[in-house]
Image (spheres, rainbow, N blue to C red):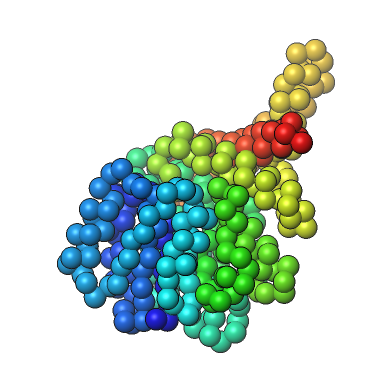
Length: 330
């Protein structure tokens, strides 16, 4: 077997069939592929849909294994142990790779361009509501995600991380797999260890994968709180990997909370707070207007600034909560 596609999965009945269909249509020959799905004991119709797809398309080799720990890194590690491919490719159950995604990843790996190769995530709405469309724009825009190039880059480059990377199976086990102590940011942490040992992470801008964003503001807030929480746990073990985009959200939250408290007593604090918030939201609105014109969707003007603000505050708050908890435990 040439390549094993590793998929962590839990209650993905809405998207799993579409993902499997995109894998079926890959330009990589099906007899060189296998799909290993590590299911976190789904309670919906996910497994039924996988079985139904497998019955109709036995030409795509699909194996489902249990993931009782129900975390993404444990799912990837378990799927990797069950795999037989020379190469491994991590994919999500609500990601939909372009038909040449696997072929191009393997081509880059085999030519020695990089040791972990991935493509650009094209964010798509989780549903067709105005909120869903606005969230998709927010999580794919530099104002929302900073310099996370895998979300929007148009140029290939060596990067800190990629979302759905492909790498040699022996390298994965040489590195010890994904860190199961982390419930999020496991791919970034893995790539940090790779780069520390001199390996290269390569983003090929010609490789595309669509990724379904969250469809509600509450789920977006929960997602980014989790990202921030586990980012601190990851960074504290890898201080050399800290980037400006990771420090700004917690600093922003601290400044807003601090100025809000001081504004109760000092007029200068009220002025500074008002100035910061005005500049912040005017910047978000300007970016949203530009994006709204590009997409010809007026709802983005309202929804995108709200979504980005939720991302920033949730991420920063999660980071600070994680820092506080770690300090109290120690």
